[in-house]
Length: 435
Image 1 (cartoon, one colour):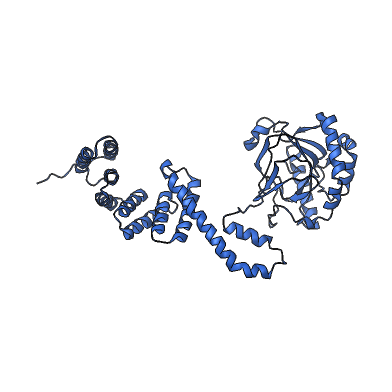
Image 2 (cartoon, rainbow, N blue to C red):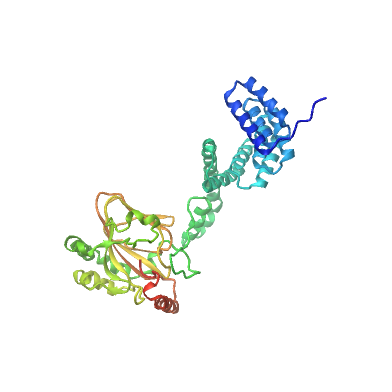
């Protein structure tokens, strides 16, 4: 009569499982299997030992025995996503597709974002001839892999998952384009930019960005990356003055370098996050004409033509806070990190003045290259970044206007609210101005 094995403690079981892993890697398969069977005789019902033994059997080509051991372990611990995933792998090896799928569903019922099980399920769907469903499952696996570290041994499976997912998206794009082609043609004269953005987001070709101001948010305003040019009839007049404004920018660059200050200038003790490399750096500097609603008189005196143009434009006007207007200088080989502005109650205008090649700007999902004399208006509370990859200096004029979607009463209310916050805090007021 066989003696009943004496129960062992959890630490003893873990030590035994570790020993199985060690001998499986270091001993010849035959010798290792003998030692594994001895360990099983010592702890025939411990899930951690059964799982380790199943792993050895699977690695040495005995998938049937591995399946048996995994099933015994699951009889004691059916809540382990790892055991269900391992059972699925053993069932795959012996060709039991039904059991493989059932095991994967059990693993995903425990953890729906379990990357390994999602990769296994995508692989199963491919083998079952359903690449569309596989593409969707792989999409979930890839999303999960961005949220938490995954083992290095999954890198090739993740690369394959990406290939299948992208192929599925390409196939879907071609299919949908055929499906909606007649409707697109029917409305060819209509503005389709919102539909196009919707399509690109659906196909994973574009991210959806929202306004994320650092301070004041007015809700219910659409998050528009670059506003339509036709909303600003005065842009033509601004662009016509480009040469005069550029000449004054070049003049102060040459003759008033002390008037330029770092754009990023945090005092000690301030969290700087992504701005640390640029704090108090002249790699990104400004020459202010208006600062927090106050004209910088000596700078305006040096740039009378620029000041005259600005005086004719509908600048944001909040005493003590806006407008802000300045020449922005980005030195060669300088990149600004992704960031967001202060408030979506106002919008930002860029007029490019001195623009080398390889100078670009991204707002949300749209990337544009600056072109001298071609202005644009954008919402800087949507994530944006800029770079000058050239060997020359880039200079643009920047100023703020009211968000064009605000009504006149809303502008009055926001102006009063902003001033009220400043009056409440006094010298300790948070930044609500143009920077």
